Amino acid sequence: MEKELTVEKALNNNVVIAKDHVLDEVVLIGKGIGFNRKKGDMISLFDAEKTFVLTDKKEMEQYQTLIRHQDPELIEFLNDIIFYIESQMDQPLNEHIHVALTDHLSFAIKRAGSNIQFTNPFLFEIESLYPKEFQVAREIVNKIDHKLGIRFPEGETGFIALHIHSAITDRQIRDLNRHHELIALMIELIEENLDVKINKGDVNYNRLLQHLHRGIDRVNQDNLLGKEQSLKNVLKTTYPTCYNLAWKLVKVMQKQLNKPVHESEVLYLTIHLQRLTNKM
Image (cartoon, rainbow, N blue to C red; front, side):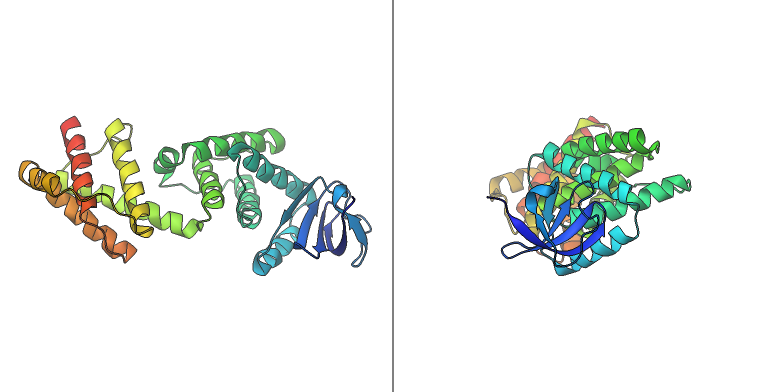
């Protein structure tokens, strides 16, 4: 049975906001779907090539404002990119990506055209922590280059990967950035206290990075590692430098996250720090 919706607003020739009694407002995308459409017109859901729902009213308002100030062909291309991400990640994306990534990419394209570039201080960490998202982001950068003749700087791949990760985990970009800033601060403390310069290409650095990342997630989610009293006594005696440094790092985590960190995190951090010093 053909499903019909009521047109609320045609944003351009290719994008229409329509009303559905179940889904509320639906964004319909398709070639010429908005041409001569007026509020109150009936439109078939099957006329659209793609659809998505923005249930958050603020997100919907931001999306409508964004569409009005962008080239319709660019919006069509950026919508294709978002649906490509969904197909590659093989899972639904949070609706906020339609506003956040569209806004980010349209601005990044303008920046690149004006030869303005931003560096990404967390590029290595993003690639290491979110490898699948980073690979899809690389493919997107190549698509933009092929379609628009614009080659993004390497750092932009990291920013796009963050948006993808944000959409599949339903976490805000600002929270992810705080997460990476905390990891960077802890790495700086490790280098300072052990008087070393860590090689980011080293496998033990990658393991440490993954552990810090998972440790922050555990604290945020109030998950605990198992209690290991016997392991604590061995590590404290055998590796006092790494054990004490691990405690310093945990105190930084507690302060930055404003949450208690279980003592078990100290033990596993000690092991990763010792691996790192052995390698050095």
